[in-house]
Length: 291
Image (cartoon, rainbow, N blue to C red; front, top):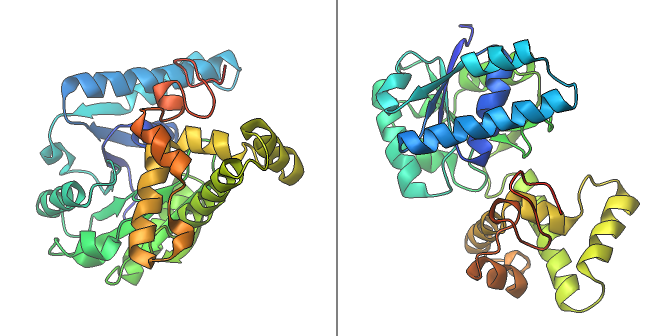
């Protein structure tokens, strides 16, 4: 089993940054690909900020921070990932763009390189169908925040081989030290499907005037030991991401329980997307801290 020492990450948004930081922290050389130089620099800046915060909490030394930052490499083109032993795609949930990336990666990377997607709702089988080696395509769905959540859903598409699955599971459990759960492909997998229903139902409870945003969040946080209540959770995931996941599951399953709440649609239309835009159900400062 070839050890993974170099990993490529395509897309350095919120999830991509978390994945890059976590991989580098675990000793891997990481190659980050973004659309342009400005976005790449912005992403590196965000990762540095995240490491600085950990230093403030005495969770990291300046030497460790330096090591992590030194393992992060900017890559302007997908072709720069040719030497990577594993590539994780983590761009926005846009099927056509993802398929385009997988078509290119399939030509750039050697046939035994694992091509993983961090998609939460799209079909792995469909992504794999554009490649000449669909057996090496797999889902590695990380849960936000990546560094604090010890779970990865390892998603098998229709043609994902046992070898690809076993190598991915070994990587997840022994290299990046997270718990891997095996999931067969299904829209929303396990975590997105259950958590989005939970958030959507909380919004229906709010719409019905049963309780306030604060009280619903407190009830679930205090009563059931959730780290965040459903509304703060939605803010941190991004309301646009929650809406996109619900709409896709509603289309795929055709069941009314997945129909997004009207409040959610209204807030996304107004550009109130949660922590990343500074306002959602709660307000946040530029570091994403609730104010």
